[in-house]
Amino acid sequence: MSVCFPDSCVVAWRNLFRPKALRCEIDWNTEFGNANPLDIEIGMGNGLWLRQFAGLHPERRLVGIEFVGEYVRETSRRAVRDKQSNMRLLCADARLALPLLFEDASLTNIYVNFPDPWFKKRHKKRRLLNGAFLRMLSQKMAVGGKLYVVTDDPEYCNFALESVGSVSAFAKEFEGHHLSELPGYPQTKYERKWRAQGKEIFYMLYTNTLNDVIPFDEYLERQQLQYPMKKLRGEEDIKAIIHG
Image 1: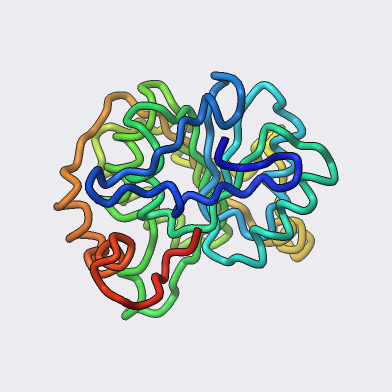
Image 2: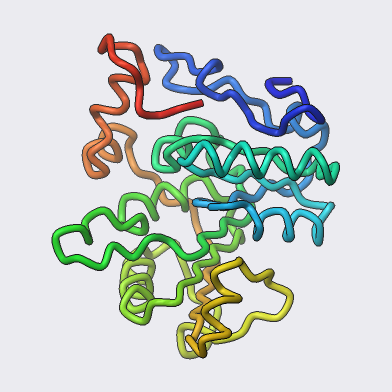
């Protein structure tokens, strides 16, 4: 076990990283003590959605990925308090965590709730759901797995529809591309606030129909992750920006 649950549900993944193998030695079946369907939420924020979803689906294993350590620590504290043993948390950049911590075809569902839209034109290249990342998602998902994308921004909705639509592995599930309501899907804190203001929420759902494969070196280059990877491997004597 890499985490001493119920004292914490945070996986100290960086301690398990093996530079030569370019992998982290995490056996998620051992970690959870079962082989239930494995899902991840990318960018869990304050963890409200993840905790709600884990409570509604004790038959699933949930891994939340978040870069902000404060959010991870607080979510862990609440999960321990509520004895939510089907949750684990990673403090990491999801773009690196995905290829390093999960086996190919091992993930069932992936949830991306309200990703940063990066409104400014010069920042749009930072958007998470680019082609390379989506191909990596497909590679790590089981065939038949579901990709959920939720946003409140109409322009980002159009971007996501175009971006995911460009990856042949993903087939859209909704007629008309998105829904404004998705029964049974928990609401985040901000979604509740936005709905109270009359804003529309856009739900998109895709099925992974085959396993796309993107070479790791190509993925690093297209995501501009060579520098963080060098630091993670200890090739530079400075503090890594990828925390575990």
